[in-house]
Length: 373
Image (cartoon, rainbow, N blue to C red; front, side, top):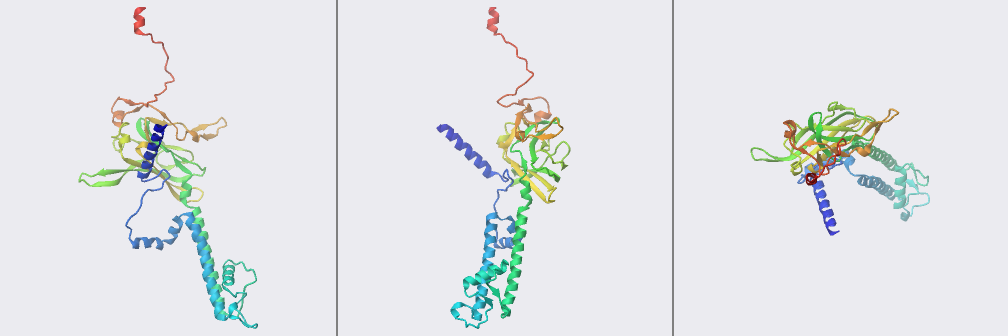
């Protein structure tokens, strides 16, 4: 029991370290922070106020939404209280019976706040009414009405913009959690799967990848997060994908590929991160979005292939079985790309073996027993 707990915590710490060290999380969020940013650069966020509000979290949006309306009601409530105070409308000023107030039934700070709320929210209960005896009060109610409309327009537009963010559409596009390396079309290929969970198409979809790793130049300069282009394609090409069903993408491991010098034994010892991008335009909203994920060496299976996921029923309908979306099976695969292209060599076989359905079972007689016979 103690050993199993030790193994559990060791695996947990290993997974935590892998997630912490990767640049792009599986859900596409970037693990990066900025330090020593000057005050002038931080002020740029306020200059681009709309984008700043669109990108902040919902809990801050709700807080600012409530605070903006409450603060505007309170500020104009103070203004109405000041108008009543100047005109002698407040109760403790003991106005005479024939006194003409600027606003009827506004005789204190609480009633001034309520009148401000009713004015900006266009409620109009009828108890507090503006009188025609104060021209300044008429100007204030016009200004408050205009500011209230501007605040409403801003928050309505912001909420709609956050709801319709393209990254929300990206939540319905998913990549396989693992990548595999196996033969395909007489070539050694790295394969991943991607699926569109909605029936609406992604128009003009394009897929590409970036291999991030630390390299050292011949001059001795260390480049962190050096980027190498990785081309992905399907059998129909790599541009303008017909993305209506799950696709299996593959990258050909040839001499120009950064995976060419890796083997089944050394791939886990490498330090790199494969980031895969999908760019497209949603058919329903015509908004462009980008989906991304990443794979580290521990998430690449050498000598496996994905199980079939698309079938056709007797009625002629196509069916997608998502239970096989990330399931793989072992296949005979060369130990390295050099062996694959340059002749027979040792093949990589998993520890659990490969079943051969056509193998014929025969009885083997012990040699010592055969001599006695």
